[in-house]
Image (cartoon, rainbow, N blue to C red; front, top):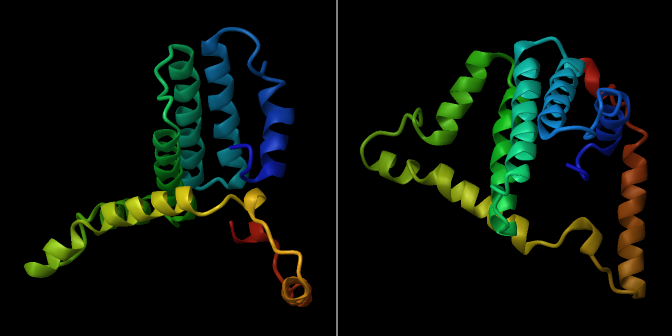
Length: 184
């Protein structure tokens, strides 16, 4: 949570979570404050039901985690925690990116293989694909380095390559880009 959408996270924390009482008080009050904060964060993204459900969903996840952690029921295994977080956030993004609840349910069906449309032998191949995709995504998460762990050699060719990449990025800034939240 600390690395994702830092400016929004800081705003939600400073202007919603802390004024609601933050984590001062009982676990239940902390869970309530997390839930309300994420619900309002969902409304901030738009008044569509998909955003409302996205905010409620994340509120339930964060409040549930706070309550379970307080009881010692959160797994201590880092791979299990990362896999669970990845799966939970992946499910949440379906609500965030869907145009309607019907589209979200259709996507969930496709993700689970229920509505793959495959027949006969094709179904046997398509059925395990969501699980294999999730397994591959979790493996990539653990095997590839974190952004802060990337190291570049201090050589002239590496400096030229990074300079060319920086130039390419700067040239892309010249393209007009509509404000992200106009599409919501």
